[in-house]
Image (tube, rainbow, N blue to C red):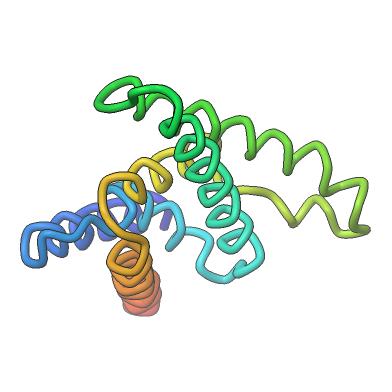
Amino acid sequence: MIVETFVIGIVLALLFAELTDIYPGGIVVPAFLALHGGEPAKILLTVAAAGLAFGCVFCISRVVLLFGKRRFVLCLLFGVFWSLAAGLLLPDLFVQGQELRVIGWIVPGLLANTLMRQKALPTFAGLVVVTSAAYFATGLLSSLY
């Protein structure tokens, strides 16, 4: 069901972006989150890592002129940094630390980049709508066969 989840998530994200002109955290982010729809702690941790990456890039952008590729690369790098930091710190803080992992290394950076491009409310609203739709569509598809 992994391939089906990605295909459904990407198609729904593209349709949502085309119809509303709001990017739901990027085109592939809802697919990754839908893949882990039954693990809300991972989703929240991924969103938190994206928020931290956004905060870091936002603070740097107050001092340095950032736009385009530079901003995108910084979002990705800080997303990777916070993903790795969570992977190193959380197993020591919690007994069930293995379940508390950020989804991917790139996903928080992609989400942070979208947060830099558009406001937080439309981004998160679109992310919730598309991720939920992809998760339930995948579940419906899996129940058919």
